Length: 203
Image 1 (cartoon, rainbow, N blue to C red):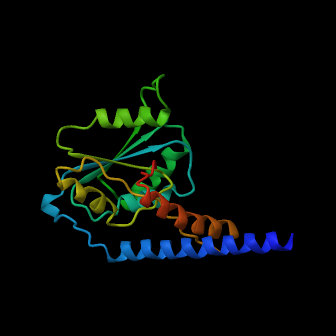
Image 2: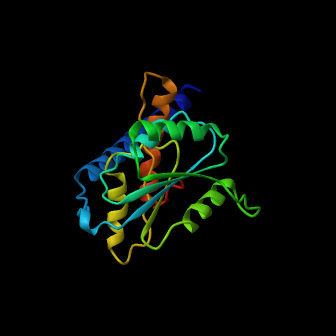
């Protein structure tokens, strides 16, 4: 039994060392990678679509980060299940506090029977866009994006061989909680695997 425990410990320790080295190499690649961001005049008009239902605890932070992008021409299109949904009040108050003018809130008008509420909201938001919008970006309510998120997401589309881009979630613990730390370390490992195997993040 003792030999088995020692063997398992060595195997797990070896795996931890390998995973740590791979994660560090991945982070180094991200840090040294040169991002070719387009200048303002070359960035197309973009619609950012956010579908909401319920009051996510990160929603105010999400809205603030989306409305403070260093991107010249974009509009935030918010589709909420209905006007009585608690997300409506949170979104309205956050937008008013920021004084944002490039945002529109609409209730979901048609609940389609052949897809989810979120897909119904996306269909509605896209169908209401005019031809001036050249790019559509989707984002979730629990995402707090950095100021250049949209610019980095759209810039690769200048390449005619690129039809879509995606990001990936990165958890940042905000307190000294074991659960947050476990999720942070798990995410550090999972992102590396997703990159190696070219798995897009559904969020």
